[in-house]
Image 1 (tube, one colour):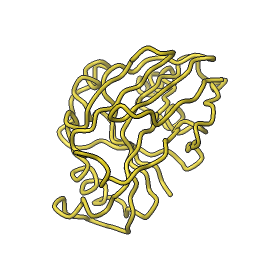
Image 2 (cartoon, one colour):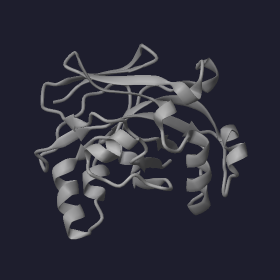
Image 3 (cartoon, helix red, strand yellow):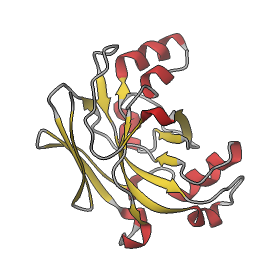
Length: 203
């Protein structure tokens, strides 16, 4: 199982970090050791002083596929949920300034909490899903999949040109604006279409 993350997939988020808006999907990887399920706590790492939350819609690949045509991509996923792409922003900024890879900022242990996943068939409109993140009871991120630059099918088609997608792979599809720091004792609650899917503390 691999975790594939799409970067800069919401215009407002790209701009808030002073990044260019991409003309094609940008993706990076997290190892399976980043995955956290069951609303277990997120433990703040000792190597960063600036860990940011990035709430994202997550889809699960449910069949093997390579070089998938976009028109068939909807056949390759049937479950959806939410995830938080925790990012050590200080380390990421340091690596970016040096022109170095920044896996240490994205791929560290437990940096990818994921909610329970639900059948896409239960969603009214997968391409217009509303979702939000509350930190300590205050909404900090809010978006809809209708605002994604690259939709689910485009993402699957593009990524599968470069690597085979396998059953169980997770794709984090990008974060809306509003990313910001978390601190020890914070409580994170994530909602999709008004339903709470995640509720966990930072320790």
